Image (tube, rainbow, N blue to C red; front, side):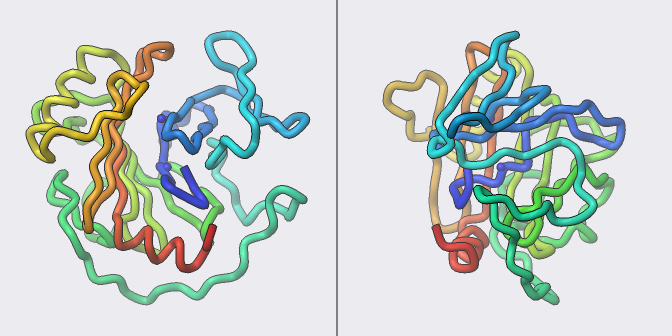
Length: 233
């Protein structure tokens, strides 16, 4: 609900496709994600609309804010967001590690994946390109899902976000995730939030009762180590 300097660079729970629904994404360090029509900063807080009201979180609790509008260039420097340092392009990344989904490999370039459509750009970490699938029916195994977003850093597959919009589909998504990856580690104090982590992938499965939406987020563990080395916390 793609956590960062960084636990997640989710490419996002917004419906930001070529036929765009304008929405921003707020990602908390706790792992929660909120889709909203507007987000802004005020008095040290990140503010956004949620369920018809204004929600406020201290900036220290917010991992990332991703705007739906695709920037044409890096945003100007601000006191709370310095301009990213220019980074050399990686000429080639060898796909490493099975994602466990659609036969995709972590660090796989988008040119090797069929039916991708550009969905936006996050300017962090030198730029993370967000893609979604075109006319392909959206499934995670046996579970029907609403949207799938792939995030690419330096030309390699970095994150995957699978989103559902109701609890019934979430239960199917949960069953399929448990079948593929084993029972997740349930977070204390949170119902319907589970984590997996190993040397290949980090994963988070969560359902938001207030919003009635859920998601499965996955990230390349090895590629994230490269991100952290380039952009230390």
